[in-house]
Image (cartoon, rainbow, N blue to C red; front, side):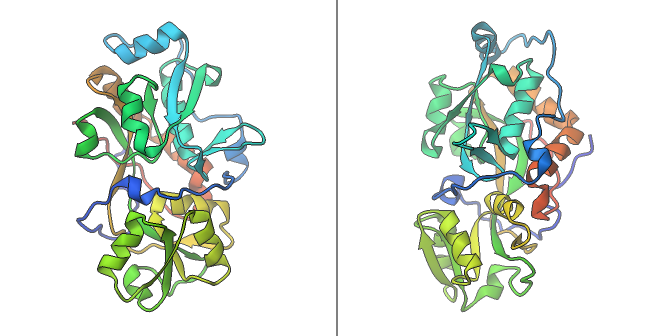
Amino acid sequence: MRFKKALAAVGLLAAATLTLAGCNSGSPAAPGGSGDDAASSETPWEVAEGFTLEGSPTFDKMEERGKVVIGVKEDQPNLGYLDNVTGERSGFDVDIARWIAASLGFDEDQIEYKAIASANREQAIVNGDIDYYVGTYSINDKRKADIDFAGPYFITGQGLLVKQGDTDYQSLEELDGKTVCSATGSTPIQNIKENFPGIKTQEFDLYSACVESLLNGQVDAVTTDQAILIGYAAQDPDNLMVTSGPLLTEEKYGVGLPKGDDVLRAHINDLFTDGGDVWDAVFERNLGDSGIKVEQPEVDAY
């Protein structure tokens, strides 16, 4: 597989790194999907047959119970979303989770999903409530004290969402005197207040309210974790776009795993390393309509 840089369309990242928990405050609650492919039952991966993973206590638990238990998000369009009407799950992160499960020999009928709040993810892994977690989960040293990570499988950071065709605002520096919206008390909004005093801010509990205000012309841009913004742009590409300007932070999304299960971590890292074509297909079918060109990052096999 060719190793690739993340987010070729953006410029240099700032050195500061914000925690994902702040970026995710007020996650959107809107349906996802970016075309027929996202809803299709056909998948770009195959379920492994007769698979075994010697030396992995986590896999042993999966095998004994006959299913894999995965922690996910269910309120982020095109990333991790649960349709409460149909009961169907969709999104880039959900497909990454399914791909991993398939590589371990589990099909969709053998997956149990658990929605875990951001603040409870490490504890759910430590307690054994889930086998692994996939859901805009940033890798950092504090979390690695309690759990391990495979990946990263995606790199993102604080970005901007504007109206489609609005090329006047490609970075926060160009929004001086304008109004930017984000979730109440979130890290992105604090970052703007501290570093861009000339920008006016609007805060709502949900990012969906920010997006509605953008479409109505009440604010000039929405800022948060760019992966979430890509999800909104993919949902409404005729009216929304993610800017190609530089990101303010760098967030590396990983798969949260039980501490010390090096065999499972190595398996997932190898899956990502060797599965570039699958990764590309998973991104395209979930987030391709966003218009952002994203490339798979190199695995950090620490």
